[in-house]
Image (tube, rainbow, N blue to C red):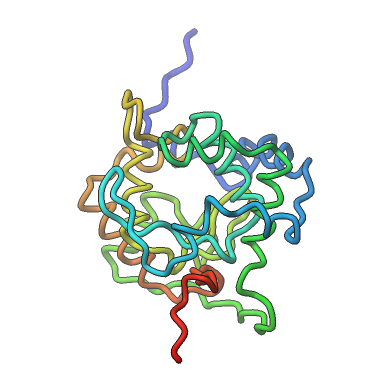
Length: 235
């Protein structure tokens, strides 16, 4: 007897937190194999500064949007993202070119540097309360199982290979979410079975509403730390 084929929506519902974490545990372990040194990473970020260390800096590909805040983001996630750009699993010509020039150790060091950037001398952030979004946004969060992976406050992911989201630039989140829906485009798209399954049922209008809400949340960790050479000094 043939087993019945589950509908995509039913299959998505059945993917629980434990199953999702298990699917990516191998990738996370691979990234953890290289211990990053923030002190070394500080000397390897020349190609990062011009975008990620200028508050509000906007990229124009594949559409105009602010480049993401990466200071305070988890090192394991940053390492996995850079590795995905290097492999072409995340399609982006500029990021691919940069990531392709980095060794595994370089990636680990750069990720370690940005994880601690901006935390020097600051008090540990208080644990945020669970979200209380408007009803329509709550339905979207439930539809995408967002809290299952990224935490009740969207800032405490259940796996270190997942990103913190609260307070990230909304227009970047919108572009990133659409990338998971994009197929057969040589320059745009992200290959991730879990995220693709979660995002594909959404319309662009729904993704924008979701991104705008997440971007409006208090940013406990994520920030853009200006590079000193880019900060104008008053005389």
